[in-house]
Amino acid sequence: MTKKLKFASRAIHAGQEPDSKYGAISTPVFQTSTYVQKSPGEFYEKYDYSRAANPTRNALEKNLASLECGSHGLSFSSGVSAIAAVLHLLSTGDHVVLCDDVYGGTYRLFEKFFKKLGIEYDIVDMTNLETVEAAFKKSTKLIWLETPTNPLLRILDIKRLAELGKQHGALVAVDNTFATPYLQNPLLLGADIVCHSTTKYIGGHCDLIGGALIINDADLAEKLHFVLFSVGAVPGIWECYLTLRSTKTLHVRMDRHCKNACRIAEFLEGHPQVEKVIYPGLKSHPQHLLASEQMKDFGGMLSVYVKGGLEKAKAVLERTVLFALAESLGGVESLIEHPAIMTHASIPLELREELGISDNLLRLSVGIEDCGDLMADLDQALH
Ligand SMILES: *Cc1c(COP(=O)(O)O)cnc(C)c1O
Figure 1: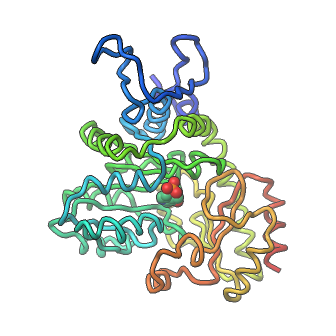
Figure 2: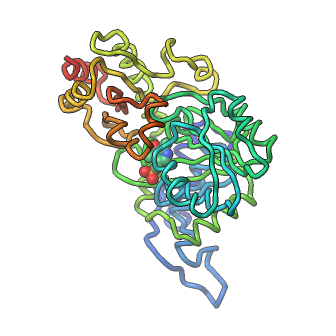
């Protein structure tokens, strides 16, 4: 029934039928490791051990699957453990096409862990489809992308890239953390796997670490669940409960994140201390049109090149009051950070320079505070 409902209704109801025993409207927290059996192998429900499955976790998984328009959801202890689970599907000799300006932790998994197991990868600029096409090999089994990218907020054409992946027999995985399922649904555009760091917008309150995969294929879901169960990258039950509580307001929060970010992007674009603003909602963004087609709105992230070098950038970061200087993103509270020193320090310097992650680049996660207060805060910090 919930499939036909609109996003806001699914956010609140999918996977969350009232509890059958007491009628509790809020999904109970089943804080249990094991389940009593009636006789050996005969269960009350399907549950035997919480590393394999747990009712609270399952409610969250159903909810996330519904929001991403997938058939199966899997919850992980973090975004990176969800990413690692996908990489565990690969074998020695397999090749991956990876987008440049990818999340630093994703790059680290490829470079420091899976490379030594003989999984090769090539990093390509996926805004250029010909470059992507040229990167495929016979051994390519996976194409991994993020859009909008981090921190440069470039927009990749999910539909076209998924077609390319399919043509070459590769799985197509999209990290949808920045956009959230409210703004775009990669599975509907042809992707096989959607990945989330639920730590960010889905959790939405900077108070938990979590990850998820959403899939539209039972076999693939089964394989990924086998990884989840075997490596034990499962979330705690309170994290599941908190995440489920957060998805109920995802659409409301996202609307405000987008509205505030758009106004701030326009404000900063006209600011004398700013060299350049990157926000997909601005007409000056090179892929503004693609973003308008692919996304419902333009998101809450924006990046800014301030005038002056590292010292100026640092001064701004030290002076903001409402914008807290911190890594991470997607919470109700506004954050600001320095990608080159903080979130993207694990990317080699040459690649960072090539991409444009320079010393005067700042990344903002615009929260849902009063927009006038946020603009005043940035204004005083820039002067
Ligand atoms: C934060 C993040 C991750 C990693 O998630 P964790 O929950 O920190 O493990 C992956 N991808 C993107 C785009 C992220 O922003």
